Image 1 (spheres, rainbow, N blue to C red):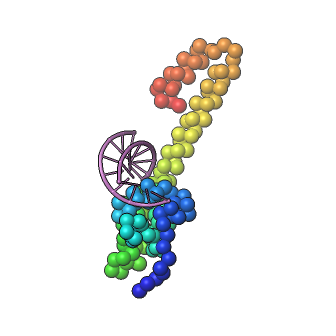
Image 2 (image 1 turned 135 degrees about the horizontal axis):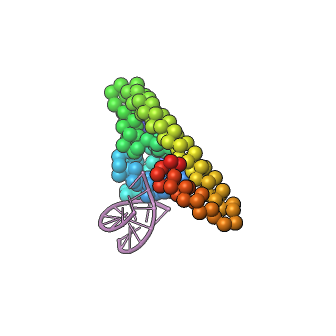
Image 3 (image 1 turned 45 degrees about the horizontal axis):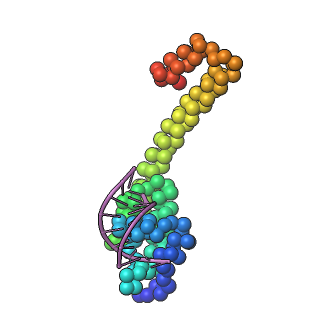
Length: 146
DNA sequence: GTTCTCACA
DNA sequence: TGTGAGAA
């Protein structure tokens, strides 16, 4: 059944979603999008737009194109809706865990960086750099004590 | 403006 | 996971 006969060109989607035409063709080559053709020119319908939207949002939370393809394609399968949601839920949980771990790592790196900064600032405060303090700092640096 | 391919990081 | 360049 015809859902809608409204179509968008690649240029229109480029503006609307702030992506490059190259990226849209790339997604198509990867099987994430399958716009109709009018001759050789791509025509995107509302379904394509929804898929693109979900794709871009999924990318933002760090899902790979392959993972996204799995979720999007599940929609068309038997028992698709439930299956799709179950896949999505699983991906969300995994990704949440990954990001939380990265957050912990980032905080550690950040603390290290702040410590570096403070120590270097202190070294630079004196008109002459204290040789002993410098050696200690470099020693801690190279021995990973910071 | 849009298409495709090849190369490249 | 895309981009750049070149040709049509």
